[in-house]
Length: 283
Image (cartoon, rainbow, N blue to C red):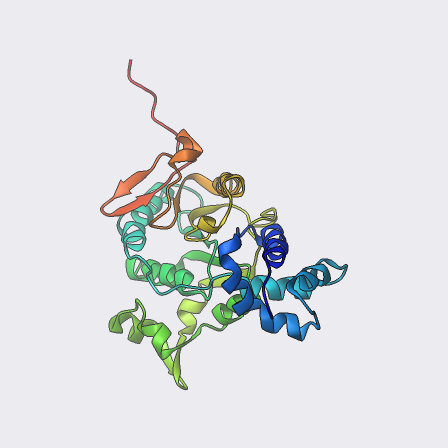
């Protein structure tokens, strides 16, 4: 199906409204490669017709299929390494120490806000297990959310093909936290018990999420416009507990969002603590 300039504009407007992703005229190949089959399946003669049909009342399932087709699900275990090193050697030790004298000294809440097929959330879980020997006696919940239904379904199963396991996961961690399952591997029940998954659209209110000690929101806001990105990170910061840690993608910077988002460094990693109380200035 031929993609016209108007088609791209119609798709770009719809996709931006649905999930915040920005498309421009250079993305004609993306529209054609990812939506042509869906357009035929929906009985549409053009991509404009597909957009009109998706906007019709009661057509949320078609909207979800469009989102699933357009959004990128590129991920791997321990992606970029440095955030997980900072998590293990900086964020978690400080968090555990700060909670030691509180009523919830063994409760940790983590949100992987663009979890894709679950590798990030399970990497966080493995980091916690490696750091805390008696992790089963702790109250730990790692929430992974993603806008893509298919990604959430795979993450919930915790089953990965051989090539997915090999991407970023050491043989030691594979044998410790995964079991062979047919031609692939499956997350062990003990690790799976720490993680839950649900579909969430980051453009929508974070109703019912509660607060988190640590939030990972990496490599998703790079596809958003400036206003959407700013709003997203301010709303995410509002979900962080006082002194909580925020990790974004290695190519992302939040310095333009104001002094609340001053970057902090540990080894090669950059992180943010937008709700940390600043020490009073010495006079």
